[in-house]
Length: 166
Length: 294
Ligand code: FES
Ligand code: FES
Image (cartoon, rainbow over all chains, first blue to last red; front, side, top):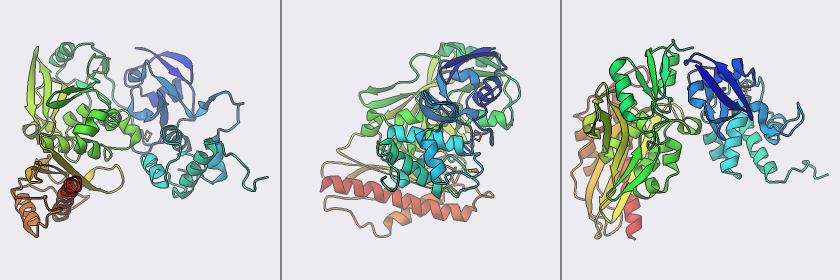
């Protein structure tokens, strides 16, 4: 069947089998490999993308179901205004707080954080834990990921100052 | 983890869905897909046809129907969780929804999908049984209705006729002056399947006398079940001291439940935990009423 999906503001059209998931569509048809394939049955959160602005698991959505929705992947986490290679505030916060090691879970974590901070710009640590409760990280132990999201929350409120105030 | 091949169709009427089910007996309906897609991926389900009901008009609304709140079969769990009618009239459902999966699965998963999937440990079926919800289905050109307590008959087994499609669920609004609710569950990790869960919905009259006490347990048996509790509770003088009457009543009611055992938890553990969660759920509900009365 022919499917057209708006991914990061561009329509991507392909003839696919109905069993193709949104995850495979994003990675193999649109060629955007930042969305990671982990468990492929809804347990790990590595495949998280934004569907109409909300974090969802792309492995649990058939590409056909996503037709008519707007998909945002990690490649366009902060819109398309940045230079290639330039990080968003949330991504920066992950780097600075050591919120990633191998990076496999990171795109999902960043997008889960983005959804949370859109709904709740000043979350508590407990609310952050809840927001990423569906994302598995096998490296960091989560503490620094929560630190990173708290830091990003603070910076997104316009207090993006160097730590020493200089 | 790739599913087997299937055909995909997006009908725009319920009767067309029923016709597809009639012509493809092994077809599966997809709503949010948060239960079906993993089953497809693990090839536990291998339908020849997947019927997407997302494009049928009118299934995604929550409406006020005088004495009831009616939730369309395609209403996403996240939407129900943030809905004012649900928050006002169905506090137990609102409480339970925070335990359903996690934000990304709630953004897609539907209230109706969870009900017809009928996982024994799922929260929404437990709430439906506690509140005595009605499930309305379309089948062969007619509307049929099932009472939640008779709807669940086994693990992932329901009374759904082979060619029927759920279109809405009706939850009666509380009728008494005061309402209190409680919901507790124990799972291996956040958002995982509950090893035991308990839900309580209690209504008391103007004078603070409990008129309706509904308690149900989930996760410990093949489907959620009510625990009949018959004790007189008067909250007019504040939180009542029930002594051992509640724990005794819960214990007696649990004697009639066939408790399951698997690699995650023994039957005796499940029973012990369910009894305690049930006590806490009732306690929370009574405290809410006592607080409102004071
Ligand atoms: S790959 Fe989608 S949740 Fe693991
Ligand atoms: S950084 Fe390796 S899985 Fe999270």
